[in-house]
Length: 323
Image 1 (cartoon, rainbow, N blue to C red):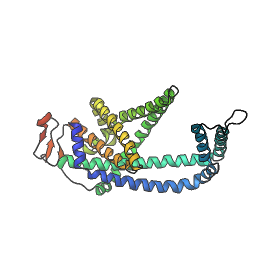
Image 2 (tube, helix red, strand yellow):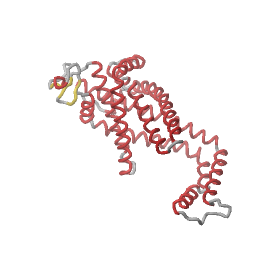
Image 3 (cartoon, rainbow, N blue to C red):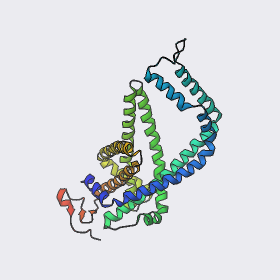
Image 4 (spheres, rainbow, N blue to C red):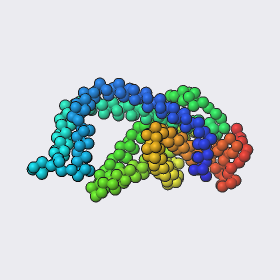
């Protein structure tokens, strides 16, 4: 019922998907402009010297010599001149990189800061989605997305800072595990290493999401403090972790596959739509899961109310929630 109602609520509030798409486009444009303004002068000299090395042409010639099977590039001492040119280019890249270490570290720090700021803004957007879903599920009310975001700006910002802080710690674990295990298996088989790294990343991200799926709903629905809602989240996770983990793993796997297919077919332009649908759907699932945990009635759509304390068909009512 939880999965079915999550899809039903997402369809009922599908306009949120368009709002998230718009917010993501604005955010990507805004942070992209700032990033370019910072990185262009910082890494301009480094990138310019790399271009002068003719890296693309060297790699192209080397790959062409491999797949063509030509022996024109074989020197008398048995070394392939294209391979030697590639080795020399790699050495030159190292020399250039050492000359610009300060600029490169400055660029990395700038990218990290921008990524954190974008993540905070993105979770503020998710907070607005969650609050809008709460208004619909609790009373079939319609709140404007932008007015909601502005009204809850302070509250959503504080929560997003806390959530992103936890998220960064989790992502360090995700990256460390996926890359570490991927490299270990890559020593046996490169393809196996890549596949295992992807599945490890998906699994650890799903675990993280399942562990914290009730944090934002508790903060929004029950009007708790950040600390109180985190405690309530862990209480819910202790009883619903296994089911939530399976749902998120399948959802993230399907989203990844769909993003690859859509990305190839649309040259990457439609990935943001898949991303937005996934964002709204996951927030809807978090909210339905929390409502069931709390035993609260909620609107599945404008005509039907669900009573989580009942089972199967008896749970769906056609009368409004008593206010």
